[in-house]
Image 1 (tube, rainbow, N blue to C red):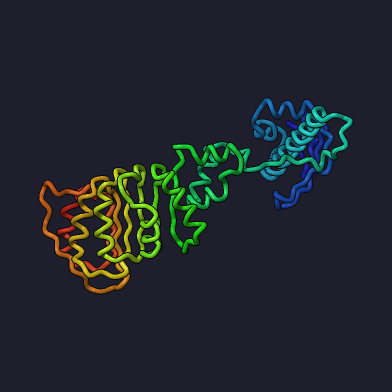
Image 2 (cartoon, rainbow, N blue to C red):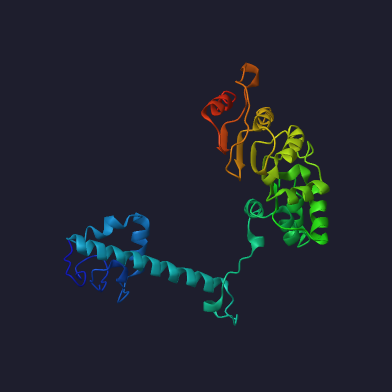
Length: 309
């Protein structure tokens, strides 16, 4: 067993001499001299276990901790030196480029297609097309790919240029749109003037409607029935003058719907007349969020339609 002092490893050890600064903070440890032969690093690399080395040359836990830090730092320094040596072999000796200033340059074009598609998923469809279309052939092909899923979010008024952009994108990519989000009825009306929400949206999975009237929503539900993949629907009523029981009755007949949330901005009593369900009236809903006033007997009737909750 090698003798270990508080400051350095004994010369009788088969591990090279390493000066240690023994202080209580491991993160502050530094190598004061690197005199290790190359075979020392190769032996570390071959073992793949630092503990097998430093446990054989130290006696107490404090020295073990610090000696492990020194070995790891030595190993990193060796790898860095080795990497620079290999780079110097690749770069021509006649090159005037300073190696220290040489940097690897990355751009979005270096990313895999799958990652770029993930990036697109955070964009509104119009913003993605506006930013990346006609940039180069690769991005244009990615945008035109049938596997690209698009999201439409109406959060601001559209000028004539944006209206034309949305109209072109929506009509050309109905089959790729998976999500529609409208912050109020005005923007919903803007969208409907461009395109009706019907069965041509073959992949549409999610619709979010804020501050819409019950009358407008009841009209839309007629079209929503034709959406084959609609699985999530969130609705916030700004005002209502109809029986909520009629709304729920139609919702329960949307065969592909799994999630439904209904919220009413004004906290006051609403009509909700709905009978107990019979066997043929069960809904496919798995999640039902009720964000409005409801009495216990009304809730009992609602839940009779949703055995899969």
